[in-house]
Image (tube, rainbow, N blue to C red):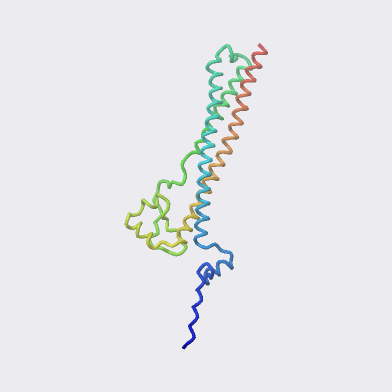
Length: 218
């Protein structure tokens, strides 16, 4: 009677025994492709949230600006002769302050428009040729809506059949860079806009103080 054969040892799973490529990645401290994809997706979503936050701040700034302008209009329209000085030094000073206020309003309104205007849309002119053959590590430009509709539907679907993970991560990295540039432009315009609100508030207060001084000196 022969001795029974021992059961073969269980093969370690892939997670327990990484292959040579995974070992090399871990030794060099590099991200696995799925981890890189998730990290880029999270970063892109965070950049999109910042764009929405910038738009909300710009709209809120416009509300504040409309309140300041409403006060200025009330001073000019409802104040009239009983309130605004019409002759003398104070009349010239109030007129100059109101003109400066109007100029500042127009300028900082342009900053609000600059903060809110759409970005990331290609302008006029011929678009660069879209890649048609999958190459390792190259962005195939399949995520941006302008690149999607620029292709034939069948060709677009066929391209996805041969897509690689590094193609997606390359395009996501490009998108993240573009979104970061958009955020930099938006928040630069927002800084100027909110500084302008401070300037407009001071200028309007100066008009009110000048009107008050003119009433005292009368």
